[in-house]
Image (cartoon, rainbow, N blue to C red; front, side, top):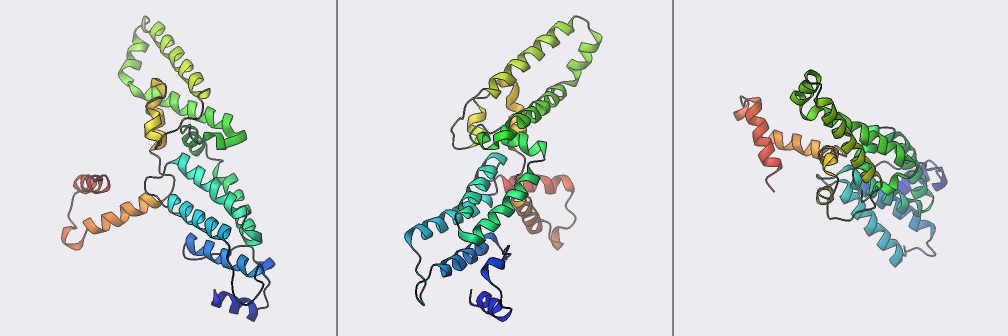
Length: 256
């Protein structure tokens, strides 16, 4: 913090000229924002951080750790993203500027139908989608239709060959439409993980929901996978075959 103050004094920078703060990690960024905002409230030479500020800082740390979780799902990611943005909006001029930048990033991020569908699949947090709820639901249902078509290609071939199977196909489609409607009207469910509540979803949509929940919401799990691979694929084991390496990574990353 001392270095930041020296740079600002040297180049005659004011705090209201700072639009963003970039550090080596998000925790340091939030700490810098907190210290700069605290200085605005100083009445003497010493910093006075009240209990509310300390509580907000703890909440920020919790959100950062949550966003760095390896098993983060899209629904939990979006919930933590929204909560962190709300906390930053209360963090003075600098925090508000960062929150505004997050809002712009959020608009771009939610242009992805796949991400919208993945958030929609988590009934605990899809209420946060707001006006995007209908579009997210349509994206999820489109993916569900594709999953259903890919479930049993042999049955689809029989449907084309046998006219009698057309009635069965229509009945299957009707069942899917009913499941979509039930899921669309399903209220907010509570559970420790999205995997717990998927068990209560309509049967035709369970497989689609599992696919959506398995999508990595951040690069954390991917980066940890590369780190694990570096420990396995060493100079002494450079001739490991791809299938063996894949099996070893699967065991290592799912050992818990």
